[in-house]
Image 1 (cartoon, rainbow, N blue to C red):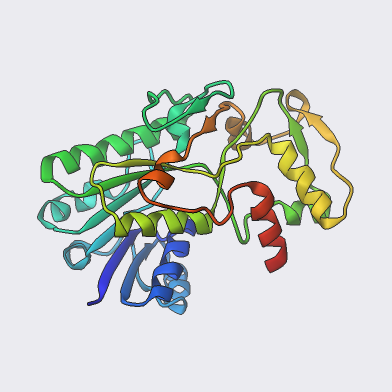
Image 2: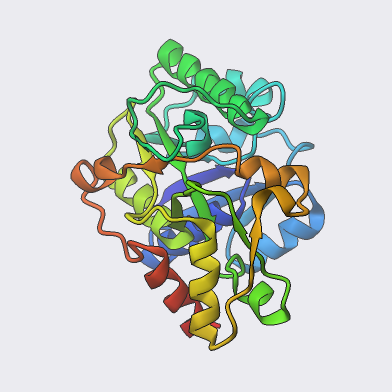
Amino acid sequence: MTRTLLTLGHGYSARALARLLLDQGGWRIIGTTRTAGGADRLREQGIEALVWPGTDLTGVIAEATHILASAAPDSGGDPFLPDIADALRLARPEWIGYLSTTGVYGDHQGAWVDETTPLTPTTRRGQQRVLAEGQWQALAAETGLPLHIFRLAGIYGPGRGPFAKVRDGTARRIVKPGQVFSRIHVEDIARVLAASIVRPDPGAIYNVCDDDPAPPEDVIAHAARLLGLPVPPAVAFGDAEMTPMARSFYAESKRVRNDRIKGELGVTLAYPGYREGLAALLAED
């Protein structure tokens, strides 16, 4: 029997899940994108593409056995929900996943957090994610929809690694004492989502991150060593020229626990730390 996954915002993580499911066989993937050009690219990947906004999604929501919501929120929360909430109230999917961020936990000055940690975001992006999570949870409570929330750490993978900047000399080792980030390879995100599809647990929340939270300057240094290039010089955070977006990532420091994806979903990470992940990216480069 063919199952149908509808991805609301077919971005980087959704593409990784689609590749995994299509390789398994027995899946039909429908994804939304904002442009006609984006739709053409998705079709080349075997995805049935829909341009949204501009397309009524009522029919495909009714057909979907699985739904992944992966669009970034805005000041109003999830951008899809105002348009599709009524269709979702009539739908009966087996599984819904919402991709959130570990940014919902806010700053913990390098301390560990888990899924029970109170949500105290300090950035606008984190606050919008809390709003969107709450909107999905409210709809699930009203309708019984099988919602699962996945809080993703910093995502890297093919096309999103540090090697290009190290090679061209633009990489910087920005040092802010005590700063650590948790990360996750995009292929491990796909593994977690696929495992949840196999073991649905409506209402569950999962942190999706690797085992090795680390200072960002350590990752850049390791990438340079892998390439056999000089380690970029350290730049103090206060002296670094950064965009407001880039600077906001340094506003929060925490280590994120991932016990639940292992214990409840049985996931074994292919890339348990940035060293394994970067080695794999370089091998594929």
